[in-house]
Image 1 (cartoon, helix red, strand yellow):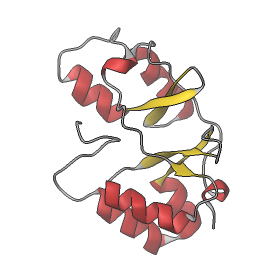
Image 2 (cartoon, one colour; image 1 turned 90 degrees about the vertical axis):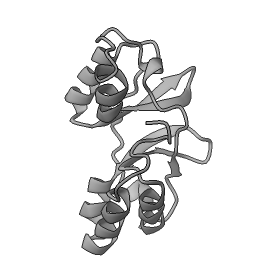
Image 3 (cartoon, rainbow, N blue to C red; image 1 turned 45 degrees about the horizontal axis):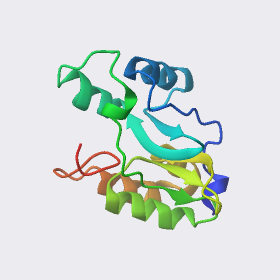
Image 4 (cartoon, rainbow, N blue to C red; image 1 turned 120 degrees about the vertical axis):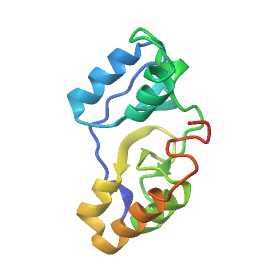
Length: 146
């Protein structure tokens, strides 16, 4: 199965100049824990609920903090025509729960999550991915500086 067959296509995009409060509102609207960050038609980051909690709230930053101050800038992504099982294995290795999906022109076309994988690939593939992501220690976001 290809990523395009499992991914979520209706993706909200935050601007790096929006506030973390705005980003959290977008997460509520689409019931997601991560939002891609785009600027000038380019994917420039990801912001997760964990970024807001750890990099902002725990660090004493307020709700008007710009997204760019807490987002992960080293964005991992996959292509829509890649094999989903391969992407799931990669997600386990790099320990991320969600990946933006781009086409071969590097345009954002969706997002794939462990939940999407569980619903389409089955328990074994999803379980392997979740086990890899859930290992103790190390990074738990889109970049190593979480």
